[in-house]
Image (cartoon, rainbow, N blue to C red; front, side, top):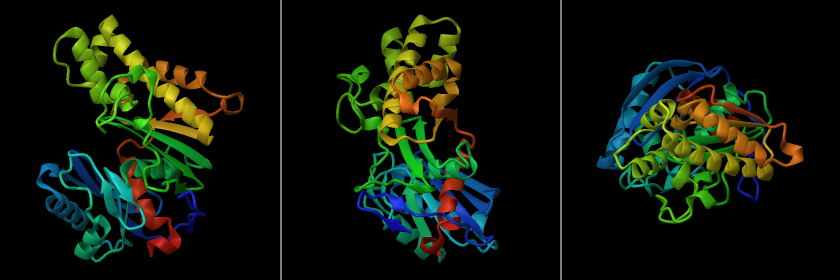
Length: 322
């Protein structure tokens, strides 16, 4: 395997024997670890609340406890980690992160977990881990390239070609939520900028927009969807606005990267057809003639995608995983 000048990892992936690996998904609210076999099957899993406000020591102690819980006695070949934040995939150090995980930026995740468990460790961003899982055994299995889009608390993406993630020169490739879109004009984004996609399309943005329009506090997308189903024109308008902004941005990204398959996952997809239909329509309205046949589908693996994808870093990456 090699890294080209663009920052993309290139080369084929092959199964490392018939071993097992531990996959870990470090999220803002929950951390999950699973023992995964060479076919991507989850043998055992364990979960705990992520102690984000308590800082890196507490977060990593939780991770290591879960790794031991699922891996002890199984002789895993290593630990693959998908984590919130911008991750230097070469060193396993967190480049930057939001305040949800206090002081997470600068944490040497790979080194700390390896020292504590005695196992080889690789670390990537959590959306990259999701994409690797869907590319391996999920909705894009067998495809040569995949654009994964995750729409939940934020909006993230990952491009996988030939089984390998495009990380970018600064490990920030895939930050779809931070491209400017007209629908978000003037709206503050969590990154500190204004007018980004995440400010109109992410779950909290949808809830906040609806709250402002109906002048009452709405905290979940589920409540927004329920109101839309009950006939609220305002709820439907908010869903449409976010869905169309997301779809148009994804359509433009398809024209840029030309993936064979687009997989869309995350909590907002749970809004169902009221969100999916306008999203896909807006996506396809942006496609060039050469990309009109791109397959667009929902995530097949759900939350397990990140666990399988993280484990695949150790199970399928040959020389780097040994």
